[in-house]
Length: 429
Image (cartoon, rainbow, N blue to C red; front, side, top):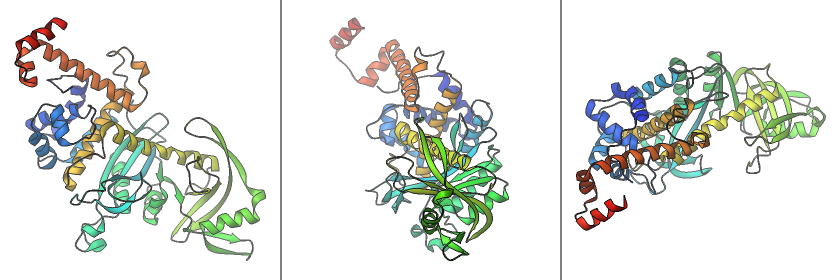
């Protein structure tokens, strides 16, 4: 069912926090677009969003592609809203997670930034758009902080030497500084193995933050070679082999719980070292075994600049990195983050940030239990999609109520001219 003058107080209250970002006309379009994001679509597009809102497609197209408003201002207002309430704000001992997300676009020929590159969700090379994102996580909270569009070097005139080109590492660097400057509370930064670059490790250490990251087998660490009896810079893969051969008696068990609450035992070996390209002293933990049955590597190697914490703390903290994967999945499953049909960088970024806005609304509603006094079965709402469907049902209810009171609107929207059909429906109602 479409949206017919739906007026949901809880959604309007949330949206009012963003009035300063838009002009009066833009805010009216934003409200319609925002409401339509909560509907279900077989294939989401600007046209399908406009169809649900019973409005002109050109309005939404212009709003996303050409209207003068800033995603930076929208992001700042969104974080200000979250930080203003204890139930949604970042908290002490928080974690900042950095990772990227790929949106496959295999048939895109003219979409800006859509190139053949690594796509994390597919685990292979594919034509896709990529953004680098930061996410806050604590014991009971997690929310996206910001995201930045990655445009491959091949689309710049001078490639990687072009002054406007920014690598994923540079984008991650900016995201960390922005989180620090917007007063997001965190003391640890989790980095995927791709982002274990010296630039980010040095930045984290200079901010007096703890970093925990996984290393690829090709990275080099300072290690004592028991066969050659001297210290060498060795690749991580070689070190794992040496530990298995010479130090099996020194491995120790660590008991962890996976996401399903199942207790697992992993064998670990720890030592202190330095990377070949970074002078910061680090603690290294080799974890033998897989995370789960789908995990491909037979071991994982982690490093941290906090050399005093235990192997258990390092691994269990790194496991929190799944929070950003959860955000990506919720944005795609509930708000069709990857189903946009716009081509320019500006339009794509705006669409992504509007999806973030809708996600944030559900997070704000969920954390404050705002639906408990509105719907009868609020206790049964568990997942983000449950909350989305609940909001969609409120929109449908409001739309039905409006239509039931206005025969003129019903006739206009549904174009029914048969009085016999109208009268028969009225009798059933």
